Length: 57
Image (cartoon, rainbow, N blue to C red; front, side, top):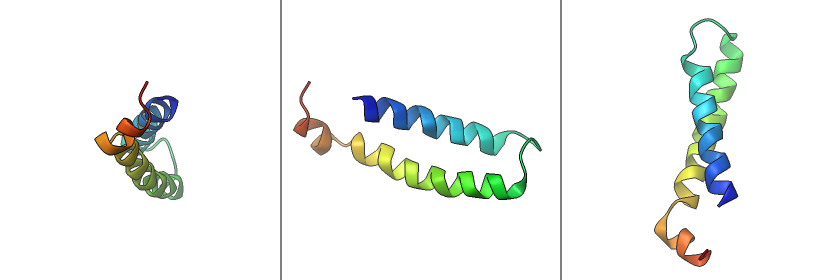
């Protein structure tokens, strides 16, 4: 449950960093975009019904 919540919050934070105009250099935004893509995969996988059924709470 903690992984599901924290990964979703971190993904939102990455998206906020990406959409803020001009506050960060381009290389930081590129790095965050790469991390955001990987994190989106984590969010997708930990929220699938098959994975959730393995950890009944």
